[in-house]
Length: 231
Image 1 (tube, rainbow, N blue to C red):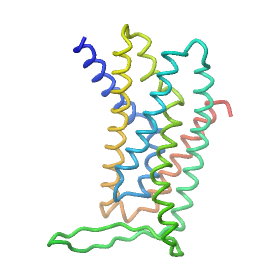
Image 2: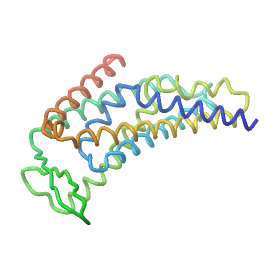
Image 3: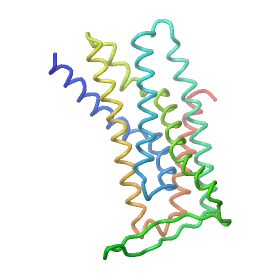
């Protein structure tokens, strides 16, 4: 039984990583947010992955215990529409930011080591309270988007549906838990490396165009989800 649990856990982990990194809607949601916080970009992936995994865990519990009475398909369809609207809004916001934000690099030394910090400023200096609110939103925005994403679309085909074939509930729990952890790890990796890539001078100099490109991608994917959802 222990070996079966390990296999279920590892299977879920691998599928979760692949699922997180292979969804264009996932990357379209993460990339604009990563541009806003590329000095600790892995946190964006962590919070998005945590929200996504929470949505998947909730969906799996519903499918395992309440699938005969709960309208799973209806819930998923409405979540798809919500994701489409969120992505369109996120894309418009990202493109708008590209016209008002001004990024620059501060390079300095600590203990003989040179390193740099990337700063983003609007035309007006923000009060410290607004800085706190913006930092607060960096946690809750990806968490909320990931949560809706976890419930929406075809994600349950890769995560929640296999629980129906397990003969033991412990194996189903191991698979779903592994999937959630895999999704978190996958998005941490993506946002971390994207943040590192943006720090390279050749990409940083084109930061405004990256914002517009990722914003356009988010709008395009969002419109696709809306059209597919019947809106």
